[in-house]
Image 1 (cartoon, rainbow, N blue to C red):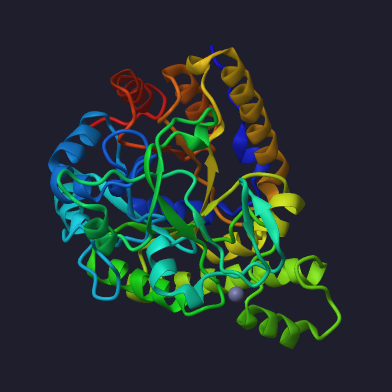
Image 2: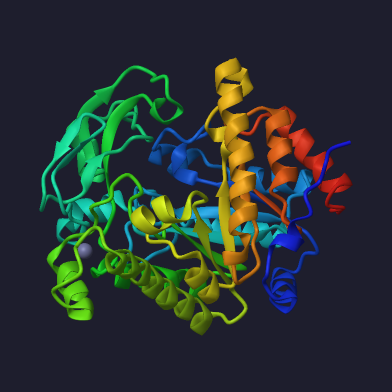
Length: 431
Ligand SMILES: [Zn+2]
């Protein structure tokens, strides 16, 4: 029999907060599945608008979730590319389809609740049309073999997603639809798991969290909560780009920093600078939470948290202050993906590496659990790992209220079967 970790003893949040989430969600235990409509029908290394526009079958998805005792769908309505998959007035929707509306209707008919996931600071499309809102490098440097200079905007080649041209389309035509597409082509699959995509390389941009991009995001959130019956809105990429330590040094940010702390504290590396970054992200969190509640007081707000060391990653790179963010939102969702680092199926080395990360992620949660001031629900991966690894993560990171999985496309039939058994025997979810 598996050994269970008694998570509640590590957490310090108030049980009444937990009851409120349970009431609003309307389920005793949570079992969620994430879906990223723009990433095609397999893994998540593609950006595929043709799939979202013409092939994504909403009824089929909802039926499958219902058949496997899943009670929540986490729909990524805006991914890192920036496409807004609903009937939006302010955003950009290249699919010409109200995918969220379709899921809301189908979910209603089948008792599948909906949570929307809004990618925040990472937005390739906004980066292409609003370069003045992209975060700015504070020093020159080199990453992944590419050089960047101080003062340059942080728009870089995307590491994860690749794009295929639709049949018969020419690059120039397609570039008009996707302004962040480059003519560079990646035709080999890399060894590292983050470099497995093939196709045209798009750019990616982390927007400045002190720019008008924040107002744009708040407008999008308002549309989502006001016009659609969603149980929750979760902010993803509510942070700076973790790949760099010198963001954002744009004029807006420097002026604001100096206005608050005076001429003395160092830019980019001082206690004050890290505090400034965290407060900037927190400020966005407050605006977002308020917008959600004003438009639907029952809609649960949340944020995706990247586990890791507090000083080196959360503070210095991401600007995520767990205490502050969890004091604002209704719940926190740590992203526990150790078996995205590797799987035993790819060989012993990758299996061992991922086992190490699993151990580390568990330890990191135990160590930092007290920083959460609200209920915590983890998301873990089903994609790119095997059945055994998936179940190990589902059990290990179920902090008491259940677990969310990432993601629908890429989950094997064997895994679907295991999810159903887990739902019925371990979470007692039955229809
Ligand atoms: Zn800035």
